[in-house]
Every structure is written in structure tokens, then in C-alpha cells.
View 1 (tube, rainbow, N blue to C red):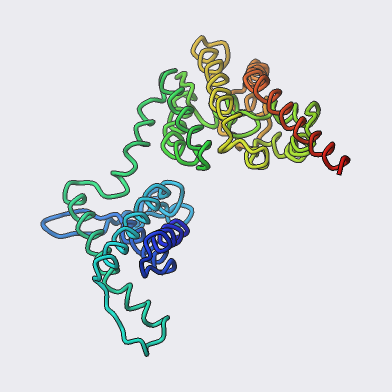
View 2: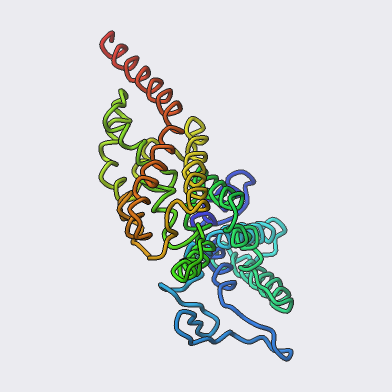
Length: 360
């Protein structure tokens, strides 16, 4: 809705069209919700999927998990695309005068509602036809849009695959999207299955909460060491304050205060280490596991469990504790030259501001 509202506002301002942002927002929501139900084409009839089995509940086409499944992170990209499509169709209709015009005596609020009437029909028919064609082909809008991200499920058993998973996750984070929620929505079911296999004697690296145990100590981007350094060594008042405020949450793998406070997202100065740090720690963990130096993950551990403790509880192997700590240290060493340079830059700017204030 926010995207539809802002995009409509941009077109209205830049092109001088009689577009109402709230109509764009509602059309975006309308298009998205129309794409949510899961349908099948059976015997020439479109039917809603029904599945009442535990763990896979689908009622009248609406898959349920913790709420409506497709309202979660798996629906983000579908929502974005449907919002853009709805606003473009709205703009097309208004630009070509495919609207119902009311007399000037009619209140503006009522008139705007009628202006959006034909665009609503156009949007509805577009989504119905597009989704209908895709369903007849055995898929739907959600599944098609998920293709670029679902490929990660085939990459979990190799080092190259794990590198691609973290590269994609971190790149999404850098542009402000919670990459872990998107990418790991496809990885986690495989990790849970692998954990059961490990308990039966297998040796999969991607299992259970492996990522929080070994790869991303401190949260996405493996920022625990970075957080400690900021809290204890940073010269910049800004970074020192953020580090101290983020330290306790960071111990429990929560680092949004750090990511948005430094900030790391949309920050070219820290984007490279933010991407490379978890790839470095994941490499160490993968090869240690592949060489059989530690037991594989055999038990599920809550993701906020602190570094070392989670590794021990998940593997029942005391040797996993130093491995987890080494992974966290390796990630910090990736950050170190970048954050040191960034700290010097901010410190110099703060000193310059203080000097200017004193001079004035």
C-alpha cells in the first residue's frame, strides 16, 4: 500500500494526472489479495485448494501458518510487483480518459471514487486473466515470482551454494530488505530435514539453526565482533553510542539497532564487509564440518542463543564452541579495516563540527 501510494503520488506530480494516491494504495492491495489464494485447474474448472493436514493447512485456497502464509515474507516481492502493476494500470486508464467523470457539483471525495471504478475493473480482469493462464499451466503469480529465490533450495549441499545463499541474503539487506527472511524461507525447511538426517548419522552442514550457531554471530552480517569493537574502541561518539546500545541485543543475535543505526544498509563504506563477513564465517564452518572435526547439528536451538552456547547445544560437541568463536572472530577481522576507516572519518567530521562551533 505504501509503495502504491508513493508511486501514484509521483506520477500525479510529475505528469499532472488526476491520480489519487489513496486509490493507488487500495488498488495495489486489491491486486495483491486477488493473487493470494492457491487455485488449481481441474476438469475445466478453477478450484480452491483444500488441505487440512497438520503443518500444511490450506482453507479455500488460503494457506495458513502463523496467520496467512502468503502475507508473510514470501509475499514481499509479489506485493511489490502487484503494486507497480496496479498503479501502472491506474495511470494508463486516467491518461487515456478511461474513467467515469462526474459533474462538478458532485463532492470531490465521491468523484474520486468513480474515477477509480474503471481502473479497478481493469486491474481485476488483468490479475484474473494473468493468474488464470498461469494456473492452467500448473503455477500461479506467487510461484512464478518466487522462482528467482527458490533456486537456493538446490544449493544447500555445497560450499558454492552456501556462498550464493549468503551473497543473495546480504545483497537484499544492503538495499533495505530483510534478506534472511526472504532467502531462508526456502532454506529452513531443508535445514530441518537435514537435521533429522544428521541425527540418524548423516553429516549435512545446512541443518537446524546452523546459521545463527556458527555463521551470523550477533545477527545478520555476523556483527558481534563489530558491535563489541564499536562499544569499546570507537572514537566517534556516534559509533560508540550505537555500539553500546546494540551490545546486549547483539549477544542474542539481534542487530537491527546496528544495521539501521550506523547505518549499514545503503552505506557503500560498509556494504563490502557486511557481505563478505558471513561468507567468511560460513566457509570456516562448512569445511570444519566437512572434515568431521565437529559433530553435525542434531538439535534445534532457539536462534537468539548466544555464540558458543548455541553451537554446543545444537551439536552436543564441546569442540563446536571454539569453532563458533573462531567464526565470529574471522567475521570481525573482515570488518576491521573498513570500520576503522569509517570511524576515523566520522570522528574527523565530529571534531570539525566541534571546532566550527567553538569558532562561532
